[in-house]
Amino acid sequence: MTDVKTGSRTIETKSGANFTCAHFGEFANLADHETTIATRTVRGKVFLKEFVNFTGMEISYTLIPAGKHTPFVHHHKQDEEAYIFIQGSGRMEVDDEIMDVSEGTIVRVATAGKRAIGNNSDRPLVYICVQAKEGSLEQFTFEDGVRDDEPPKV
Ligand code: ZN
Image 1: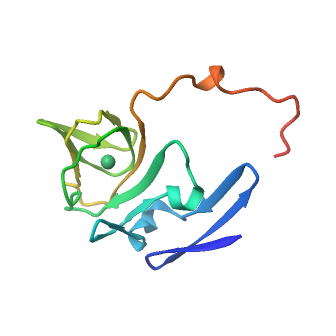
Image 2: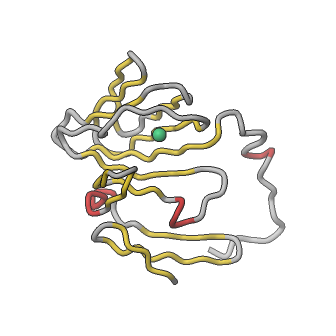
């Protein structure tokens, strides 16, 4: 067990030879986390790579409070992103397109897409963002997964 601090929260992590596990608690409490992007401290955002040691992707949790929006528009050099909305509702812009988003919406954005997310509701908007190198996926699901010959222990 290792404890990692993020904002006012302490995250307990556990690692084994082939896994790392971290528990961040309920998404409703994401506002207690903070992360620094360049010189700006952003509340309600956690990049997970440093906690679970991803090697082929980055994933972040983000909570945007009611009436707020992401602090800037951005695009990427080589990573595509999937925005998976899991709580609340709001709007997402990609280039000149503005979409309504809510729990259950997923938006894939190519590297060049200029993106931002706003919460025009009166409840928190929570999403998970997965970023991975665009064009890098060679096999997946049953092409990549290998069934092992043992029963589950759980
Ligand atoms: Zn991004």
